[in-house]
Length: 115
Image (tube, rainbow, N blue to C red; front, side, top):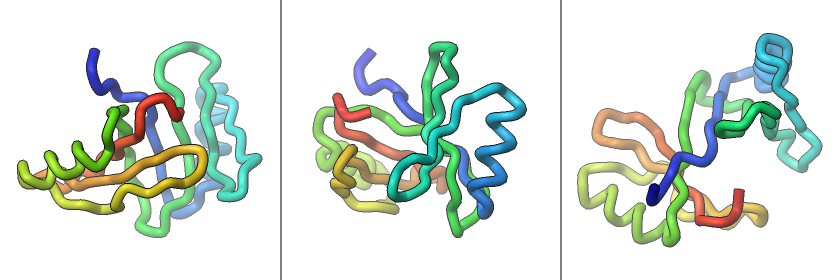
């Protein structure tokens, strides 16, 4: 399947509390051993892994779509009525961006081969 969903993100104002909640509720392994204390989730059960983290904007659930050229897809979604939320950004371990679809849902795009 071209451009699969490869990552999910569950956000809230208290990232640590959410990380503990999802770890305890579903047995997910949440690793925050990184400079941003981002809770990388490994379900150890197959499927899509993701992250649980703090977001000052408050609660949100997002998916991330893998593509070969993030800028080209960001240009395409904006031409179709989407809005850039985060421009293409190289975070070292991943190149990503985010857009809002015409209904306001925030969706992420990640460069292929980096998750």
